[in-house]
Image (cartoon, rainbow, N blue to C red; front, side):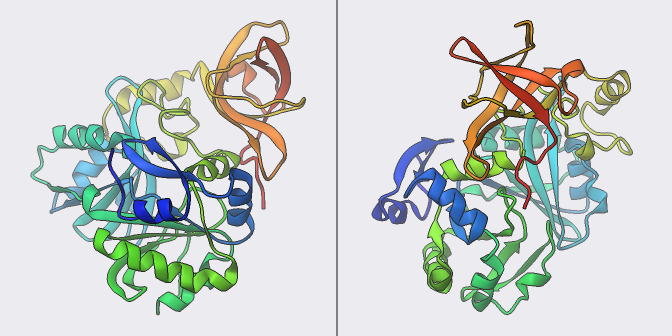
Length: 360
């Protein structure tokens, strides 16, 4: 089991620790609902240092990224980031990731913790272009400072005007006394804020300064359980649940990051799938009756026929109702379609809704 540079702090704070993607990670501190509300209404800090960081550099770095990712990275300028995925050769997804353009011939790819080795092997297997690749995952820490008060709370730690950093843009500069820190207006919560990339030996000092600066704003540490409820309220996909090696980006509603103005791994087959239409779609649904949908629960129609499967589900803290994501047959995927979630042999009424579930 790996530790992050901050594991000892989480333990000192009394966090409930559990294994996640091979790391010893904080799941909750004071409870999911309280932590969820802290991020929705104030500011909270996640240690997400388990995520993977790959640096790709050289004159052909963009060409390699264009080959292995579905989105069009040629549109990126220095200081911008892009959500994308790595399609596999069989129509599924190796991983979803964020691509950062650091300099004219240098990119940072941020990948899921559980897929670091798999992604590294996959990208390396396509690197016949002489691109210099560095897996810096074990050297970097990542703090997600999320919530509507994040900008105001963190401004004292940097001369960079945080309010000027647009969504999916980033700056590299001085933060909490350290140079060359990446301050990225990205996150996984839908409540605004930043992700701070630093070296492991800087992480504890930055963590402490972040909490000093945020003290008057009610800043709190947040665990991965609330990260999951926050992302689900936004309808954001979680790799391993809502997308995986067998789900295509088009089925998952990720057509917007699948650009056919270039050739990439399996692009021809995905293009044919787009033209023919998909037989199942990932949808958001909310329960009309009381109940909590969970991963792998069956989705049925009014006659009890199985039409799909729940991939993510929870009792949404901000909405006080059961919500979830799941794949259903295309004919049952339209907004307001009546569906039922089979919970302990009882079919609970639900309806397909437009994402996100949570609207500010």
